[in-house]
View: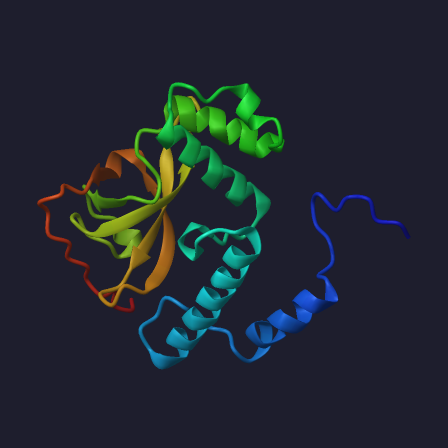
Length: 191
């Protein structure tokens, strides 16, 4: 068989598999957690970030890991929109797939809140065990259909700063976190 759709997916290169195997089997976990095991994983990620930065002549702080090409494209598009919102046109989107192209247009025209910002919940979300005033970080915009309001995927953190959930929140349930506002994150309790 000859596989010709490498744009969508491909097998892992043997050297990559060898390097990643420990993190796919015995060394897995949450690198954002505060315990020793998590710190070890965070160190491995930061080492990889520095290796990549050195290969491309960048600073490690400029290397962003994402889970897929669409997420990477969207991050680049949102950064371009933030840097110069009036001058992003279709020429900037030539290399993007259809999903990214549509997302960019929606982001440019309809997104009320900036991604990767802390936001405050303006009402209780009992099904998520969250209360008005809890802090979340927006990670993705979901344009609503004509009969629905827009929403966002929002990351929830516990009191230690560990990411513990990603939820979908309607736009009307969010407000920007004011600079003078003190962040208070409650630990979630099991139901």
